[in-house]
Length: 226
Image 1 (tube, one colour):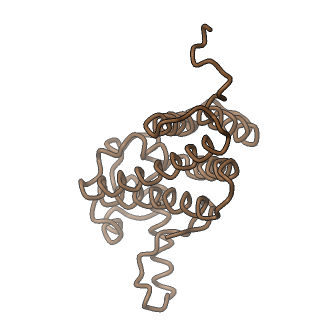
Image 2 (cartoon, rainbow, N blue to C red; image 1 turned 135 degrees about the vertical axis):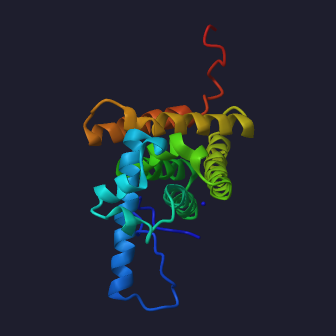
Image 3 (tube, rainbow, N blue to C red; image 1 turned 90 degrees about the horizontal axis):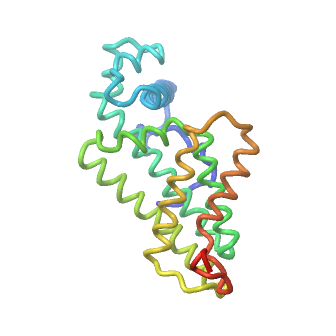
């Protein structure tokens, strides 16, 4: 999912050649591009990919219609960059958490905190990714899904390691994967939840995510009617 900071607020996409010194002009262009991506995420989250024009996005960011094409050739190109960026942030951030080498329980707590940080700071991107993935170009869609699979498998590894550490009932990888996907469904729905205090929402989402991922102890019956 290269390692990166655990912070959900990564740098804006850098479109400059790393071998070249950053000039004021290139820095301004990158900043403007980041503004357009933010405006696009907000509008697409509210109205959907099909309901937004490239000119609408430019207008929201103070860029004229024709000038938009100096940054993005099409609305699909913008969507590709936006969703590739958030997928890389999740992948790299998850890798950075796991690479700290903490005990499985602490790693799981850190993964949950990291994912919730992304949800809180980038809710529009999460909403667009959840709904408009199929509107991407095939190549970008394939890369996003590859990054998502790698991100999921890191979580699965940690859930299985925690189960083994706690001598809990055996958990098959397939079940661990289902639990992780279900947990993502729970967390990623948070942008659509009713208004709730942010600090309490973090605590609530963390507790619910952990409950979804933990395996019942060996002493618990798998049949709730027993």
